[in-house]
Image (cartoon, rainbow, N blue to C red; front, side, top):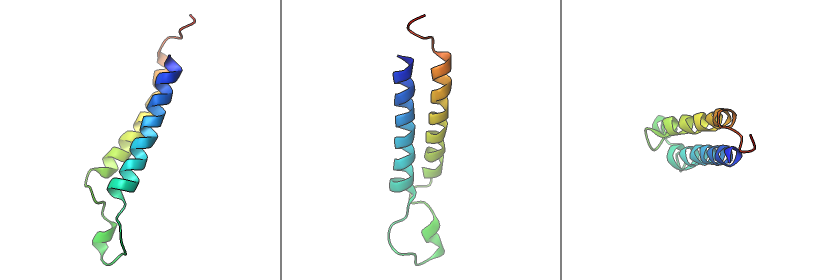
Length: 70
C-alpha cells in the first residue's frame, strides 16, 4: 500500500511539473520583447516547485508509513 501511495505521489509530482512548465510557464511564439521570458501564468514557478516537493515527500511517506506485512 505504501508503495502505491508513493508511486502515485511521484507520478502526480512529475505531472504537476510538466503541466506547470510546458503549459503554464513556457511562452509560445517568437521572441519579440524582453517580456517574452516571463511565464504566461504568474504562479507557474510556484506550482513547479510544489511538484518537486511532492516528489521528495513521496520518499518520506514511503519511509514513514508502516509496511503491510509487519
